[in-house]
Image (tube, rainbow, N blue to C red):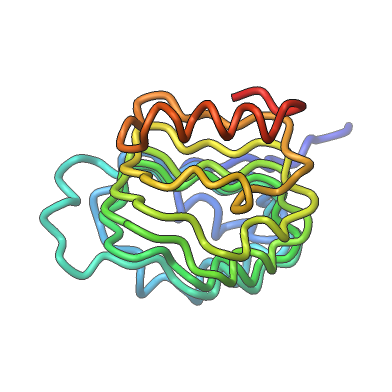
Amino acid sequence: MYLFKKTKFSSLSDAIQNPKNCKKLSLLFIEYNLKDKGAIFSQFINLRTLEIQADPSIYDLDNFELPEEIASLKKLKKIWLLNLPFRTFPEWLTQIKSLKYLMVRGNDIDSIPDTIMQLNNLKTLRIENCELKKLPKTLNQMSSLRFLGLCSTKLTDLNPDLFPNNLKEISLSGSRKFEDDDLENLKKAMRKTKI
């Protein structure tokens, strides 16, 4: 008799029962702080996909944090961080070299650290529905990046020099703090990029 091992989990308590089998962890509508769960997360050595979405009630937590131990997960390829009460971008995310997809959406961050360029394998970066006002100077060095989502931000500078030349698409819907001329200049400078 052949039994399939469960690899997708929707709670930490279930996932920790078989931590080496956990390849996808979806924590939806969490209502608690995760900062003291580092020892648990560090056991998910085969984790490929992590999705964490907060319940609206979590915005009452002033000191919400994710455990930095997530950065030690060497096989992690995709991360969705949705509606978490971040005030600053978790810089330890830039240490996850295996990442190909990163979405940080629905928070209060207003900048991305220059260390974002360390994510050499990142193909999709979505920083959306937040207070983001400017892009890091090193963004243009991200040669693997193909899709950049900047929807519903407060971005003011669309200087073409800020963007990697190899981008296939930039999404700016809902972000109108920049001038129309800036958008037209970006389109002219990046003709091969869908904007």
